[in-house]
Image (cartoon, rainbow, N blue to C red; front, side, top):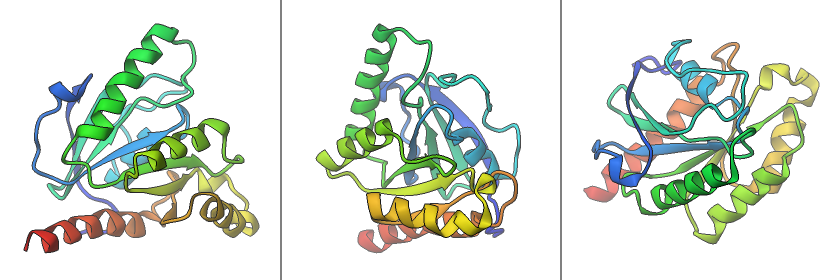
Length: 199
């Protein structure tokens, strides 16, 4: 198996939990600001530039989009927080549907919060993390856009996120795949833990 990327395919979109099929695979929802690079993250791990639609317009993802990675795990691309140009009513509806999905979806083994490495951690990143901690949900962090961070600052950026959020913190670059293997190994390690607990 190529650890630099896995074959992946888009499966289905769903608006709410009741529309989410049971796939029988470990599931990893992506949490992040609207322009943090969730689609680029999916495309990078799949080595497929057009698998998940990328956009310069924040808030384009309005549904839960499911991607199957080599029948090993599912990645769920969620609407970004901090989305622009969306009515309050629409935001409230998404929030309700997403909370229901994140709290009641049995297939979820860990959430993945994406943080933009070019900037300080934003207020709504902290708010999202606090919500996750209130419900004691499993989570790890991926720091995106590391190709834009000067090499002499890379370690500081990662250490700062570790200090603020704790747990597993992994870098990611959409420009090349030098970080992919560690990320894929992390996804697969959750899979192995599930199999061991079943046994």
